[in-house]
Image 1 (cartoon, rainbow, N blue to C red):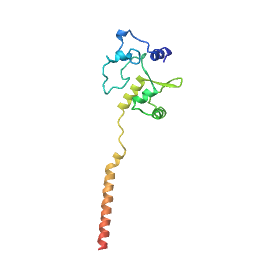
Image 2: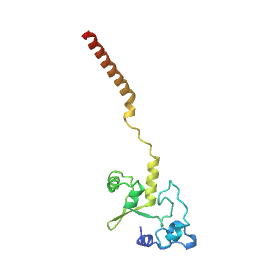
Image 3: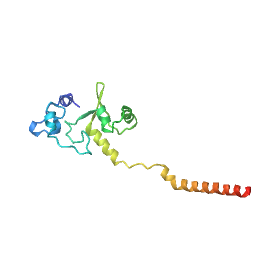
Image 4: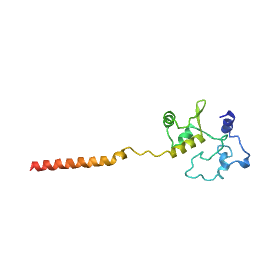
Length: 152
């Protein structure tokens, strides 16, 4: 990632003529309050940053934005993902601050959605466990009946 792209992203220098810019690009600028009245309502299924963009304009998300994206996850969650999940996107470090490319996060989300849902292991053994439990209950009932019979 070149410094020029980062500088344009941080300072929000327009990358297109204003007539070609989306109303979403005005967020975070001094024009945001006037543009907010004209912004379309986002879908309830859309999170911030889900709109596609080109490689040069690929937004960078800070760690707090990544955590908010995944349900206000803790910083420890991000740390564990980085340490134990080799498929989780690696951040870009600029000084002490970590940035993630939105396109990398979207690709990771798509890959996670395509993975099969793991089935709990207990379901594999459930029929045998239920049968064993029935046998144990029947045995206990027989012993109780024998004790009651011998007591008479």
